[in-house]
Length: 246
Image (cartoon, rainbow, N blue to C red; front, side, top):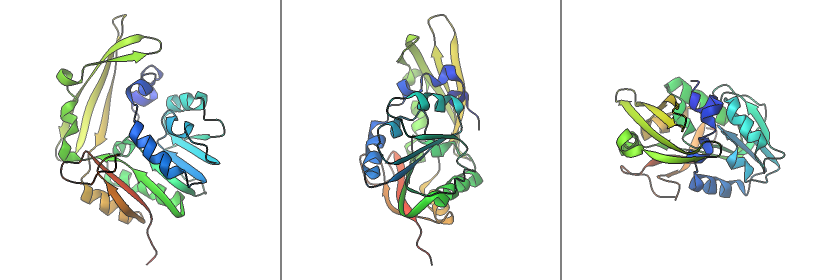
């Protein structure tokens, strides 16, 4: 599952410039107001935890290059950063809020991987605590927007200035796995690139795996503005907690 987009420092340097998910961070920050402890699985460069002041803030990510940025980010003083895989993480502690945003759930490409990640959430969630994650709706076919003709853009990079970027993508309909390329053309003629794979999972499958992991959804969102889930909604966002014992 190692992806240079997140493990290669030269590519990770573009991450914050490319990913400013203001609405998901704002929504999750509201959830965190009533939490003493927050676990951010797939914390990336630490932007979400940097905006919080909860007594316990733990960020987990398998990519050391991402965590290097997180540790140096202003506002993360007091946060704990752990290099680990969300499928196998076991901290022997529980949290009031667990978030897995930025579509990080989609990097889990198999049923077993998804079950393992959800089981990790259940193992670390405190009674009465809440979890939330996001996964794109396959019916919205967002990967069709990730093509060279409509994805070309300019990215402002602190070291390289304005850099031309673009993507391409293909989808395997049988598995729901999308393979997409990310490209950055530098002024010196070099092109930095990475090939990534993510899975688009139908809502019915997410529901089944959430239940199997011992979790329960209290509310499904169709976007980070709180819209309803529907055929055309861009996202599947479950907000829930531990399942009640039988």
